Amino acid sequence: MLRNTDATYGTVAKLLHWVIALLVIGLIAAGLFIGTLDDDDPLRKRLIGLHAPAGVLVLFLSLARLGWYLVSRPPALPEALASWEKILTRIVAIAFLVLLLAQPLAGIIMFDYFDAPLSFYGLFTFPDLLAKNMDMVEQVGEFHEIFGVTLIVLIALHLAGTIKHRHFDKDKDVDVLKRML
Ligand code: HEM
Image (cartoon, rainbow, N blue to C red):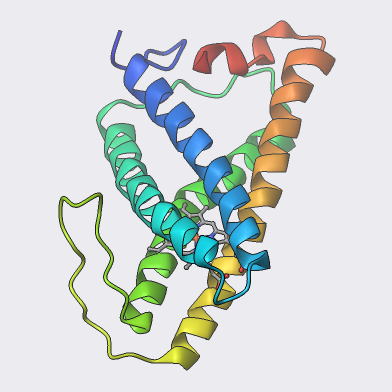
């Protein structure tokens, strides 16, 4: 079924979750690698050319996820979870939501200050709204780096929670991974 039910996520939410997860992990790995390359390395330019539109795709998919969340409410957290786990789960979910919008936006703003044309797979090109400013490229780049590191921490917390509920908690009602598979 496409929609979420009280017991499980539907196909739309599952697809959005896993496609965004794969893209974000790939983008973080590529971004960290790009950061190690010299400015004049041709591979840097080529990788940024792949990284940027894939990051924009994450922005669109995250907006779609937010829209779908409003249309089809996700299943409630299992009652058996401790209240600190419910609170932490909510904090991590909200932080993901905010960062998966803020991170690509930071990338788009960086591109704009750099005056580099940003095409979304040839479908359209972002308008050049901001005058070239290399100081701002640096500053927004710092945010892009901090958001990237924060995403790594969030992914680690998210994975740790999922593994704990599946393999270490005695109450099998808290195995939330099966609702997303
Ligand atoms: C969710 C989406 C995205 C994620 C998770 C992501 C992640 C990252 C990470 C972790 C880095 C390495 C940061 C560092 O160590 O300095 C990076 C670098 C970079 N990203 Fe993204 N990014 C995303 C979207 C975008 C978008 C949409 C653009 C441009 C339109 C972009 C442009 C860049 C550029 C130009 C760099 C290289 C910065 C430098 O080394 O100077 N990113 N990204």
